[in-house]
Image 1 (cartoon, each protein chain N blue to C red):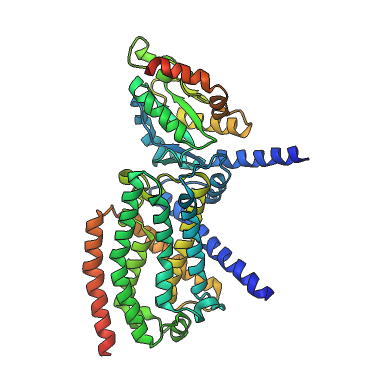
Image 2: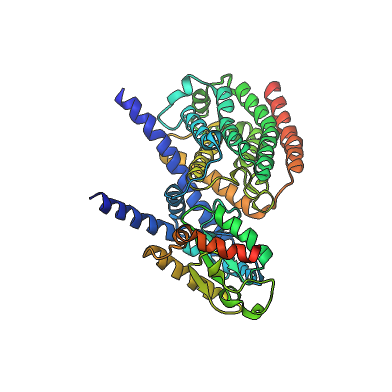
Length: 295
Length: 170
């Protein structure tokens, strides 16, 4: 009983810590690519604590304040469904398909909150967020089906176990892995898929009216979001890991490649982004699915 | 005892606030031209924990970059009142100090401090990026010692500021 409570507290904290270190490295990597010195490495902690310590916290109604909390709760729930080395948590009681639904709660919570403001930028931002989700969910579902068909199970823990001894899905289903990378990248909302927050167009979109404590919660949610997306990619395609250290190294490798991509791209328009997702990733994912079916 | 804990909390909060200042990217006059070199690779203000932000709800610092039209003043006041406490204002260049070259213009306000409380001024036309970075460091010292209290003054002397604003805005 005590160990259950301990795990319930420690696992979200671990996910939060991993997301936080990724944000720290992200600021430094961006700075180095732009030939700057960059902020101090613990700058995200200063930002977060400053936001949580703001004296003023403006709210535009109950749902506005609840939005970040719903998003955060959805993210924490999703964290429990992802197996980490040595711990399978709730993975046995819900499968990959349930996880796909739970991962959408984050965006929906934000949509609820942002919809409660009268700011047109927030409405545009949230409509872009849901449209983009509509775009990348199609190839995501196809590659998840191909992975399920490959291993004849929807249990994420079994999928990780089947990839033991280096039989990663990356080697057995390379096309699916490439699509998975693109989809994960799109879900993180980095360039060229940063249409949701696009500071120059819609002034950070759904977050436009959020400040102080609420923005702090959204930042924490973003850290969880990074962890969930990349951990799922590592579990599905890079064979999970035998211990936490290797899990972190694999996740960091994926994140590092993503950050380097983030530096070189410009921004899509929303219709171009959806067209992109429904063209190349979908076609490649379908080819991969046919390969699995024929094999 | 309770007062002591409150003081300690305030000290820690100020220590954190000065290390993470978000600047709203709102340009009123020509002084905004000096901000891109301050932000980008050459002078890199993110070393000090500063970052440009786009909405008033998220920002901590409002820079009045150069001359301030009466027309713009209305928007500046809206932006300032939308920002969340604690918030800081920097008057930028000689126009915000005393009107500068527009000292006899009917359309430009002369002294920023009469309309919104400024915590700090940067003299010069134009202030170079070095001067801006020095100003940010001075602002950090003010925040650390608790002297950057413009937002408290605005609340306390609201009648005075509103009276002055009404005079020019009509």
